Image (cartoon, rainbow, N blue to C red; front, side, top):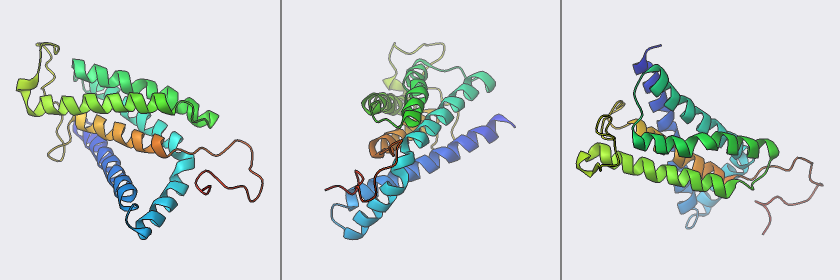
Length: 195
């Protein structure tokens, strides 16, 4: 498989992530004024929440795999901002994976902080790509942060794809409600059903 096919595949995954984030935002904001959207939000959360940490782990693992593919197989050298984004993404695979297996929400603050920091770095990296004059001496002149190695579908660059992954992870971690390892007694309300 050639690099352009793989980057298109990752770009399509980024589109799916973006669509999921937009749907989540519409349901979250729209549920404040629409009973129909509130019911749709509640159904979506009830379906996704128990698996949300596992899904977030998959997103982090795919993002990690993509970044490793781009640097190790496609030989696109990561710039300094890419390394910072990796520093936020890579630990999420382990943190979210352990949380999903343990069915624990304890690591949520750490995961949200890492994903939020990664999203901010990705956003800044996007600005540097679009406006190279913003690049500072913090970036390596031999490997500037303003180089656009990939641009799929007219706007999906490497930091855009990373931002899409971070945003979806934030949404999934925010709604995560792992089911307890032991069965609940019949009639016991879940966190979503409790007042």
